[in-house]
Length: 331
Image (cartoon, rainbow, N blue to C red):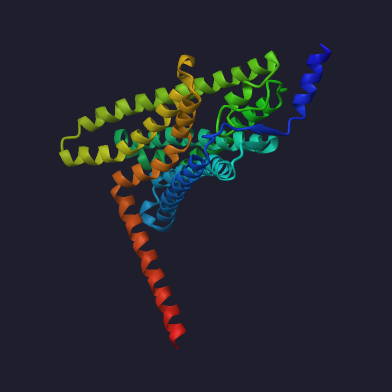
């Protein structure tokens, strides 16, 4: 009993965790750094272009444009939470992260990933109303309703992250400080817990969260069944093509998000492998935020045109600025 109390008291003073390293070879560590740098730059550029296009062009000030702007913010948040620390560790050949930094890591990742799933569910409702109830679209998805739904998504993500982070980091940890993940994630921190009751409490919260996710998933599936039934009843081929163009990017993003996350969490323990876990964690935490803007911009012609116009405008302004400085230097 005394030994257990001493072990628990020692865990409460834990100052740092050890993250899972991608590799021990210095050449591969530098390769990972440059790879993550390229991924983060692509994500920042793509999401930044969507944010700028939606903000600058009035014809994109629609409910879908507004929700897409919020989705880009969550994607940027996910990338900025997980990738910089992984880049730092690969560059400086270290695996440590402070206790406070780990708590912040876990909170912000949960916050952005939960908000993103809520936004994807809301965007599914937007597509459902646009195609199945077009006459009620302006009423059901007015500017105030959209603002309330987006705020609900962000608040839900915040409360979900706060609840799980507070519950997990209040547990005494006595199973070492090595996390089997390249960023701080709640399930991996729970494995270090040494109190059965606290562990069961957090598992209970995770079951409740999984149930909410399942309800949202059922809603998304039901909505798309109704959407595709309505689309197939459209007589003109052009109308069907336009309807599918509206829905397919969202469906692709939802499928990528759910398939990678579900497989990462629900894969059988028998196929455990550190390298497989790393690949899966990158697949669901880094790849979707990078590909989401590319998927939307490829299928959405209005957004594609706005981004092209934005890039052209910036390029012309940059050339004019360079020409101005060049003439100033000559004079």
